[in-house]
Length: 62
Image (cartoon, rainbow, N blue to C red; front, top):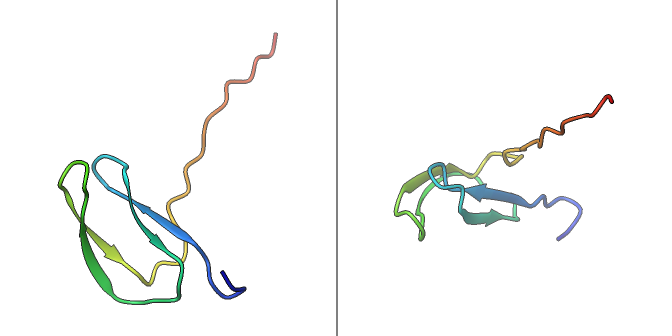
């Protein structure tokens, strides 16, 4: 990957299976069928960041 490329991982909207990796600066819209659940995902390739998920940690104050 060069300095201008940013890796974006796209997951299925229904089952969260990893269906696509975007590594180049491509634009447009595509549809990808999830191999796990069969759901057809519409993907906008112009997006710059993938969905960021945060894990909640329980802080013990004992």
